[in-house]
Image 1 (cartoon, rainbow, N blue to C red):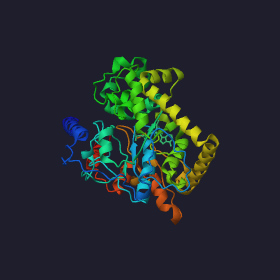
Image 2 (image 1 turned 180 degrees about the vertical axis):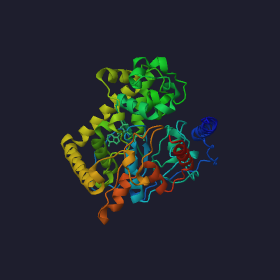
Image 3 (image 1 turned 30 degrees about the horizontal axis):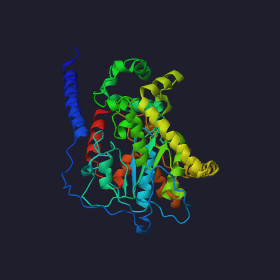
Image 4 (image 1 turned 90 degrees about the vertical axis):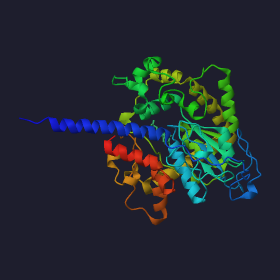
Length: 424
Ligand SMILES: Nc1ncnc2c1ncn2[C@@H]1O[C@H](COP(=O)(O)OS(=O)(=O)O)[C@@H](OP(=O)(O)O)[C@H]1O
């Protein structure tokens, strides 16, 4: 006779233990320990934290493109990058990490994890080793934007950057990536959960649901506003203008190379500073195709973001016009040529691969819960000495790069161990 008792008992034990541990970790991960209380006595920050004080007094207006020639300008080192979700922001982060390392800049990093206690609002006390009056050059990890706090952290000459994406596609990406941590989606049962949700969003959505912000107007939320407000309120337009005044450059995923050319011009950087490989891409089989009908539904469901995107699409092309369309086309072509060269120098097979085919664990990207859908890369075995370091840096995923930069990531790492243990 078979003895069913033992396996059942250990399965139950495992289940209970797993549930308890997971609840504990989720709690810990979401709230963690409160940031260290530091004295908030105001000590003025220098006008510039860049090592070129001579340029410090050249004002850079948000909103406009400088008309002055590039020749003779000095690279800008004080940068605030508002890392929005699912907008190619990890690819931009990699660019900033490399630039920061190259110039030995001081990053304002989070403490214990890779974000600033998102979705809570940013507070400068969350910055690792923060003391009032300290000089930081770059802040670029995920946060919920809080302008006043960021302003009190960074020097006055800081350049503010962010990136947006067509909200229908962003919604599709976010729905896939964060679905499992949004309980509101758990009752969706069909094959195509996205289509089912969009058929009747209000049936599933509740603004007060846990992590509900991932489901509607995520860009507006990340930028610090109420993603559930009425899209037709006159306040919405006012907020767009506020963003326009605060951010010197709002990039667009759909025009990524053009965005980087504008970035390079604004920051007075070199072409090599903006070389990149696409990071955090998903395998095709996990991308829900948006039919024209679903695209429309996703757009009107994310109406504030759709309006936001439209607004900044216009400002973006205005900047391109000032830059010069022909000059832009030439510079984009040059960037693409150089990126292709780097691809052939660095990437094994020349393209991204499934997580299971990544040989080095240090090249494994962070995956969404329950699925290994994010692609990564293998470095070529033989890379000439000149490019070896650069190739590795360009392909290193965010978490590993943060570790290399000395960031304390104990919560992220503990969470990762629990996920490995539970095979999530
Ligand atoms: N260079 C470039 N051009 C176009 N698209 C790009 C690029 N780099 C990344 N991506 C796409 O951006 C999505 C990942 O965004 P993020 O890195 O911001 O994600 S995250 O919030 O940090 O998890 C992810 O989109 P989805 O594949 O739709 O999920 C990536 O494919």
